[in-house]
Image: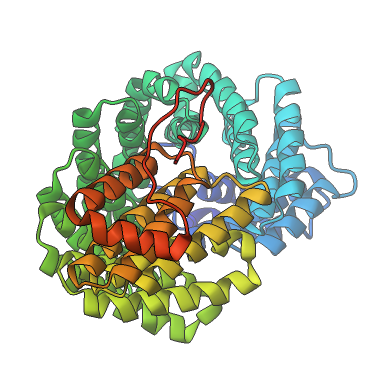
Length: 562
């Protein structure tokens, strides 16, 4: 608002007016009063461009170097990161300039942030490390340099870049060093790191959560909450409210992981409430955080088995995905709603939601098959399960067949990832077939799943639990098939099922499979003794077996069958 005055003075009395205008433009880019609402990015850039234009014609390399550094900062804020890097390099290369150590550190720090914006993280990390070292060796800054960044800010950038590169443990170590510095600062010193303060705490908690150091994250929670709930939320609400939501979401996850589920629910609900506030004022950033917060709340509610409240959160999340036209996320959320409805016992409603999920997934898979066919295959498998729960096995069979076909095709391109999933979907298909009475085909599905899992085990994968479950389901199917065949006076088919059940016991150590085999043979002998024993002897040439468990030392020994 006051710039016209120094501009006029600069025209009329250049010797006095130019330094005055330069100072005014400097404070337009980097305001001295930290509790004022910051100027717009466009305003900062315009002031920086004018400052460079003011000093470029003059033989004042120090002021030109400083102006170029401010221009680099304004360009970086504007997202023009390539130009920001060029301006920073130009600032450091002005002939004859002797910038202060604080100014050099500031310029290198801006360059690191611009490289981060370009996704050149390794280069950015080197620049950030250099900026940290420059700030460490800088003396106490002069008055005019106090707004030119600081060591905590550079440390925060360094830590952030380490996190981006997946070096989370190193990142947390740097954040903790930064926190130590912030704790030792006076109120006057903290005034110059007003935004660094909440960012460091929020990002530190996120890093600790990623490392699984939940108790450590909760230990700094009081300070972190104080940092994101300070007065800066009044002056930079879009930034600070977003930090608040992220912090609360991470704290809720840490509380849940340590068994504090009631507290986790309160914190997750607080995160959602803050995300609502943010979304009302800043929809672009707020809706993304609203999505993450609702997902976190739904997870906590699921752990508490508060399914009605979880459904409310999931439905709001689905509406949000639909409004944003995010098809894959909408399909995932509809599938979660189906799962939740299944937990409440409303199997029919669960099936309807699962059908909606598949419809959405099919639509997105048609547009981008390579990206979204895995989602469609998984949701088809889930739909088949919901159809079976709703007592519609005839519909469940073709659904499961499609899931198996699709997953087999995916396994051709990525065997390691999709072969285990093929086995799982074969189990789903086998279960649906068993419920329709197609026992022979169901047994074939389970045996194919078993063969796939054994092949994966031979390749070094850990699929023992999956194989045990497959054997258990196969044993159940063979038992059911044998009894159904006997009820229909198909004794030969019953014997075939019994022989397969006996063969299964010889290739597995699973106690439940052996127990099911023993009881099946014993019950059938007691109920249909003469018919079955004669049919068994005709088919095998051996007497009908009697099962006993021998005392065998060691784990995993097979009981003898004789």
